[in-house]
Image (cartoon, rainbow, N blue to C red; front, side):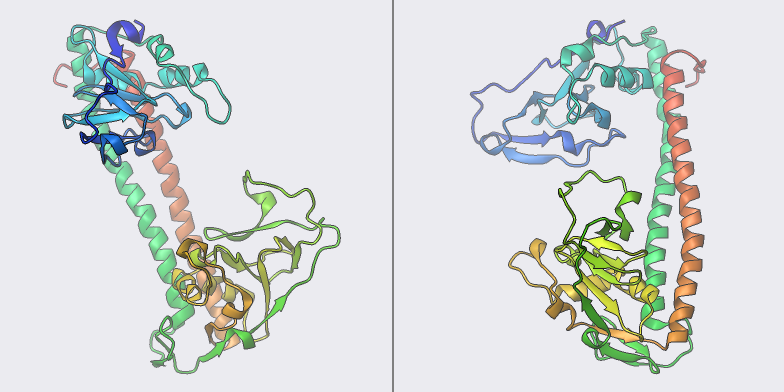
Length: 406
């Protein structure tokens, strides 16, 4: 049966003459994720609320985003406060009590074929949208109400187990990322020999360091490189707080490209590149290959006392980004810029070169182990989510028998 015959759509909306001081709890499209979780409900006085805050929802309703439909922002409304209002960017589906069980409905509209139909009927390329009437025109499988209720109860129980496992694996990913950061930070700031005696460095962000290490201002460790490309034909490099310095050809980026890159700054393998505007976020690293970068960036060549790989490891730890923020200039924290005169004021730990080599090798080996486990975990999460979708599809379309005890 087409959804509009088993449910009503957009039944209620706030009138224009609502008291300006009426308090509403509001859900916008960005507050609902692809798993159906509502992350935030914002309180507003009606007068100050967004103009799209109009749709009234009730217990048992399902909200379906009609814009950017590929994000699958679909969520059930369960025991809402009386003043809960959602954006007009949602279609509010209200199951008819004699036709459609609310629990079954929330799974039926997440069935893969239903989702595919929503996307297929959406129009627009960068901002695909669908009319609520089109959503109502999509067919769903509609067994008798007792079977709907059994199916809903069965899926509630089965998916709860899957969701618990997915949540645990996602938590593991977070722990692995934290372990990676901690491992690198301890290696570049304390070394590998835990029995080595320590002494105060006199530098707040470093704390105690091995007694045989040196401390030096970066002005004596780096030279600024300001050489320009004549043709702009060299490999274009990007600088990110997530991936460091990488060839642009290796990244899936959709950003403005200049008509010509002639005059861009040259950088060579091992040079330290700092995104001047985003240094406070940690957008820096050493170049893995020769190339060019934006003229708005700064390029520095490490001297003989530092290995480029050691430099890359150190500048990528969060505490270093916090340190360079102290030497950045700007009125707003989100618009701070790190210029060479500020960078050259920073202090660096300088272990012996052979120790730097050992630290770099250790970090590479441990990162490989952690990354392997993270990749396997990500793959298992993807498989669990596939299993979740397949189970919903099979249950709501009658492909599996739902036990009476469900």
